[in-house]
Length: 135
Image (spheres, rainbow, N blue to C red):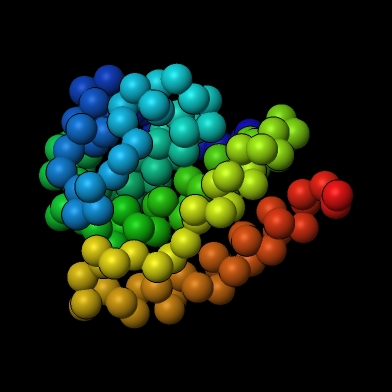
């Protein structure tokens, strides 16, 4: 996929995946380990954070929420690209249905982050939606 990944240690991966989140994520570490699309997503997300000097531990998501939010968007792009390359349209459709910038847990002071990322989000939604086979 031509992605320049940072080294992610098993401890960093575990701590990040099992750390606190404001959203109460329903995806478990086992879900990620069993799914190559989610695995790519999390590896890219952690790598993007490391590229920006963010320490990876069980408090990363809480302390660096705006940066995590941005890294999540990049990770979605790689995840969806991987699904498209594998022609897994079921996964692609499923993820596009749940992919949103609306985050009820985003602290009020970061609401401008949604506006900042909205053009990138809309571009991604269009790019991947346009690639779905027509019925």
